[in-house]
Length: 451
Ligand SMILES: Cc1ncc(COP(=O)(O)O)c(C=O)c1O
Image 1 (cartoon, rainbow, N blue to C red):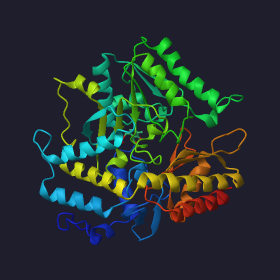
Image 2: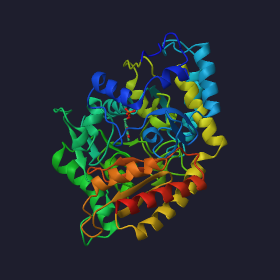
Image 3: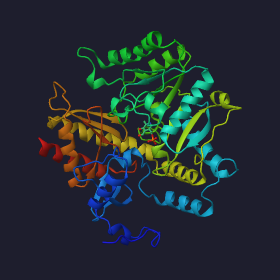
């Protein structure tokens, strides 16, 4: 059948979309899109529209989106306020670059700065990008310029993006193909409590992991690091949620050695971990640089770096530019996200519904031999599947089956972890307790069937 032309039907009308089957889209993707672009599921999901916490496939079937487009839809798919602000801005002027003045840039910057201040009152200067990797690249540049040093510490199991510096920060071989990388990045152990050595308590292990940061600085670097970068909770790494002592202890060590503390809030920001705007606030340490993306735009490409005046001053006299960074439409999208976040109290909802869901998942774990651990904060939850609770052998194949079965029942889940055995539950922040019940029920039924 001849496909309807997008030029004839600029609104991507139902005619165009319904002239493609999922199989045809997949086949065309395999022909024309880089083969490294993955799809989830035995039979990949085709999305035709989305609203609130739900996705709809081409046949109109509804799915609760518990992965939020890889932790990106924060205030809900197509939130009407967000749509309105974007539509208005796109029809007024969509692009100009920061070479010219427009108030949207500073309106959003002021609002964002106000929201990150509880993490560190000195955070005062922004730069906008289109994605998380660009934000992390700039964070590295800032740290190098400010300290005059070039060595970094990052964490094993971490993920920071796929540009060269961001891949160098990333602590998983899965994402570190195509060597060589930037020199001078060293990886310390993640505080992965579930897989700690036998005989250690969670607290002892947290202290050991933090102290390893100092050992690596002493033995592997010149002793002078530019920065330490971490996700407060590792996302792709499988929702690794450090103990309360871990970051405060690391912070002391990093400061003792003259480094900056960079918090990669690409997944944990925008209230996802509950109550607080930034994930690192849960540990009470003061980041020098914060990087954000994903939920900040709710699906519109928008990344940000926020830092202190003192660190930002190291860029004075140097040019840094990003063609689309800070575009008026991105600013409108970001502003709408922050307005809705406040008005609908979504960080509080993430804490309340996330806490409720975690309790439900812990109950599921009691009766399901496949569930090794339930962890995470707010609406950033992980369920680690193992073949045996004693040996903790990863149940990677079983996880794929659970995902397929959940999809059949109308629930979309994410996966992560080095072995691909951690279910990631990170829905839009607007979900209700009833929807949390649905997630727990479908997960339990799917786990039972796999067993
Ligand atoms: C914690 C974290 N940092 C950085 C990135 C990179 O963001 P982007 O894909 O927008 O470049 C990601 C992406 O998934 C991420 O999860």
